[in-house]
Amino acid sequence: MNRITRFLARPAALAVTGLALTFGMGACTTANVASTSDFDHAVNFRAYKTWAWYPKQANDTEGGPARGYESFTDQRIRDAVTKDLGAKGLTEVASNATPDVFVAYSVRIENQQQRVGGSPFGYGYPYYGYGYGGYGYGYPYGGSYNYKAGTVIIDIVDAKRKELAWRGTGQAQLDKNTITEEETYRIVNSVLGNYPPTDERRRQAIR
Figure 1 (cartoon, helix red, strand yellow):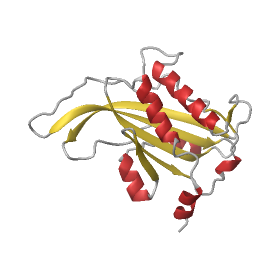
Figure 2 (tube, one colour):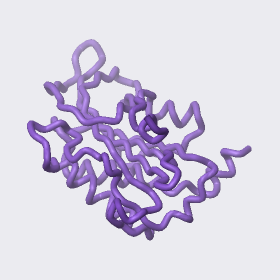
Figure 3 (tube, helix red, strand yellow):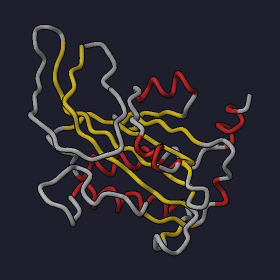
Figure 4 (cartoon, helix red, strand yellow):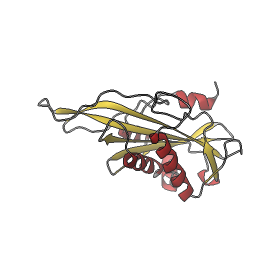
């Protein structure tokens, strides 16, 4: 197992906001999306000009009933990523055309419970798709309520070194049992809003 495979297999089971506070990662909250990112501080991100989808990227990260086609969520994530990176000046190429970076992502939806007055955001997730169960909502007398949380993790991998260069995570409370089209674009845009890392963040990392 090479280094990139180990990176993609590792759970991201840390609180989204806790990551930013504990490790000094960049974090922001945009339109009810909690997003955070971390990166290899030795990488010159300005040198990245071309990208392609990670060759082993799953087509249906939500774990649909069959394989070989993309779910609506996957289609929307790919479209949102393509548009965002294109606006940043990166050109998409075929995965066999020696891109500068590969892009991979995962999505997960989970039932969570929130106590009134606490943080509404939970944890990151392992690098795989999955199905989901029932949906609950409301504000019980006990001071907590159940809700759906959707998380998207986006990795940017140095294609030459085959090592993780940047990882962004975004999580939002959902209105339904799945991530809607509007929510998908909102989460992806919030996550990639942290890419590329700013010079200020790089200076803070080496202090």
